[in-house]
Image 1 (tube, rainbow, N blue to C red):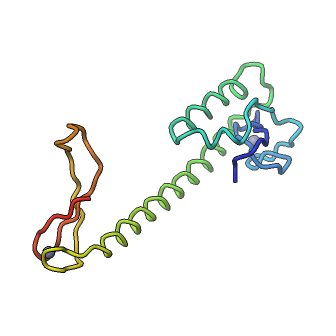
Image 2: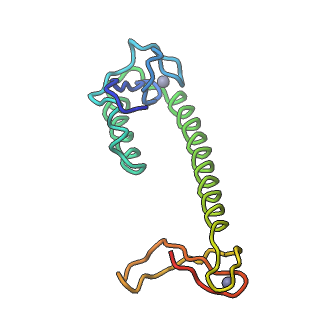
Length: 152
Ligand SMILES: [Zn+2]
Ligand SMILES: [Zn+2]
């Protein structure tokens, strides 16, 4: 959806990064002709992970909004934008967590114990891999009936 060459604008008043072609900042309603054109396009979003995106946004805001010769910067609008983005992020994180839990649950229902035929399992996090010597986030399943461990 975002894999295109639409230019990315930034709002000099609140620091909102504008992707849509709505013609204004979606947060503080500053018109498009006041928005600053960055030298990035929406394609950059497909190339960044969460942490990189955070750093990139910080860099853009430092460069275009928090620079001393920007006459539009407005602390109130900036704070409001931060509140909105924080809440959006929170909702997205919760949604992701729920999806992961549902996926783990449906996965554990499909398992059948090779020893006793039970389909009831509990996840067991494998903390340390003997093979690589590194921490892993792999999860084994333990049969609730006979204790047989099904390795993933
Ligand atoms: Zn704005
Ligand atoms: Zn079993």
